[in-house]
Image 1 (cartoon, one colour):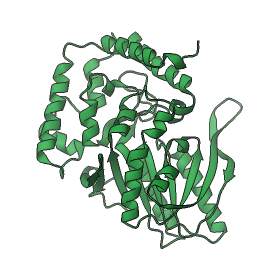
Image 2 (image 1 turned 90 degrees about the vertical axis):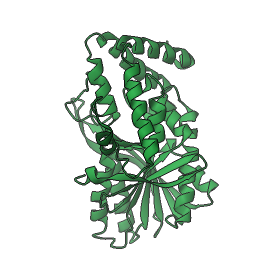
Image 3 (image 1 turned 120 degrees about the horizontal axis):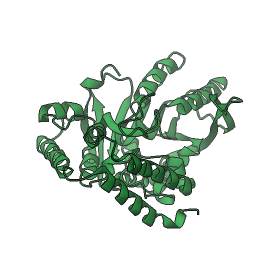
Image 4 (image 1 turned 135 degrees about the vertical axis):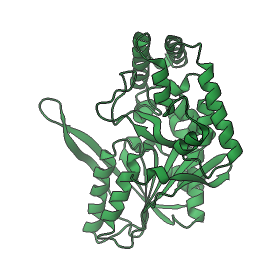
Length: 366
């Protein structure tokens, strides 16, 4: 990540409502993209999106990216790796079917935390696997990447399986709602893999709506509630322009605990998702008179509210994008900041608790 400050995003394509940006200037071994589309923006901006709609929100953007990769001849023969259960949110098989990409097989892994007698996490273990080696194929993976520990552990398990059968992968495509650590991880893995598979083309990592960042260990954020290596926010990342515009067109969205919350719970254990969201907003309500609202705003924006346009462009990594659009986004942010002058954190918390409870009342277990 030493070259992160040199990275800019450039438009790769804009088609059928999907904007795709590619990272340039990082001198990376792999390819990194950001996708932005109306449904994925809704998913990340609206914790009320739950159940099957979580999956459905990702279909359009994923299919369009599959089409692009097929046209670029970067996917020909595919093998999907499903890391249970998070992978089930990603419509990889459906998108391949839509774009006429042959899926040779689907492999499954279940990776779970291992605890000691005191309840502390001591490591990870693969509890279930059904793998197939497809020589020369593209391995497709969908997963949330925060710390990346699960992804690395499962990936090494798969690579060992391939090597034991004298088979090699052509490349690996990852679709993720995730953070910057994904870049660090895949760069290191590519170097590692090429030691025994010299022809390995590398990773193609596709991020939805942005390359986010996680709170670091020991940092619970200005609110005192956020969790390290779990909760995503904008600071230090790169946000798709349309996602930035939509988020800041609403007053409260920016202040959510996490960009995605728990993806698995949102689809499969909705009552747990509701508990997490309400626990956060009730915590904010309880602390509302103690939290420095301005400091919280700067934390969520990822920079000072007094930032100049030139500094903002560097922070956003937008140097190669349309100047008129960038100036609009900068002015929009300034207007958003001004609109919060007469708003209190208590008002925001009370409104979000009411909205969320009303919208998802049918899922609440009493």
